[in-house]
Image (tube, rainbow, N blue to C red; front, side, top):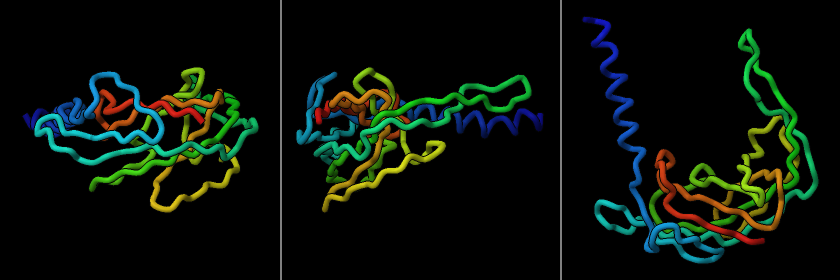
Length: 175
């Protein structure tokens, strides 16, 4: 009986997390509308229809435009040791945005895909960390993304709640 009681909190926590993963926010535009640079995105809570804020992706700047190699985990060997592979990235970009709302947004709220539909990666977590210098723009927030396939366009999927399964908005940014 003690064992079953110990499992109960973990089960309840798991159910609470799953309940929080559903779509909780939408935008003023219908369905799979694709926002563009400098187009305001009104973030709306589904249940109350209350506007939570407005997000605008204002620009993308190239910080590094030359190939660099990093080591990425590619599974484990039979002893549980990580197996790494070398992956070449070809560009680092910085995405600038503004948000008028009370929540603090970061790069974790965005999933980025490059011109070949590969996921962009946070260069700060790479091994070795590539060299680049971030820029600042007054009144704007930003995040950086390393791309394997530069092509002058990013497809971004914004998630107001990080655990939200379906994105709140899709944004296409040509640069």
